[in-house]
Length: 232
Ligand SMILES: [Zn+2]
Image (cartoon, rainbow, N blue to C red; front, side, top):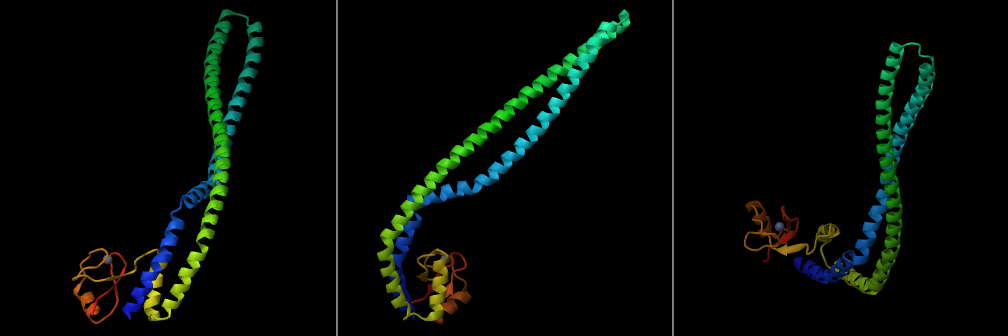
């Protein structure tokens, strides 16, 4: 019963090798990283849009403030013309100083705002050019990856056909357990137990499991998830 599965696992190495070469290929890695970037672009643009909207709001408020100061300056000029005595004049001069401070603060605020707006614009430009680069990288490498897949097609199909044949000889329940592990990218799946430890990860097995092995059962290592058997 185990023998047939071991033969299957041995032949499965060919399929595993093809899969590893495809998934580990430079073309696939580059295509995946480009795709990941492209998937994140929308979110980044949304964040930037939110920042831009906030900046615009602050900018509009600064403009309102500026308008108010301009109105005040007009009033101030006519008040200055109509000032009758020195106490009125000194009051107006004090007001003028206050306004000067406000104007300076506002100018600094507007400058800072302009810098921030500039930075947001730069980010938009960067996202745009990075997106273009990622699109090109994806297109180029997706094609390369497809070509690579095509080049392995015959070899892969022949390995799969061989496995289909070998599968018929393996106990179906055991085969199912094997394939489940295999689908989770575990390979080799089945190991022989050495002394009382897992043949794959060296974990010491509990007595109950060793007894099951002695009964000819195939157990699962609780540490590495491999299937374990004991030679009769
Ligand atoms: Zn183990």
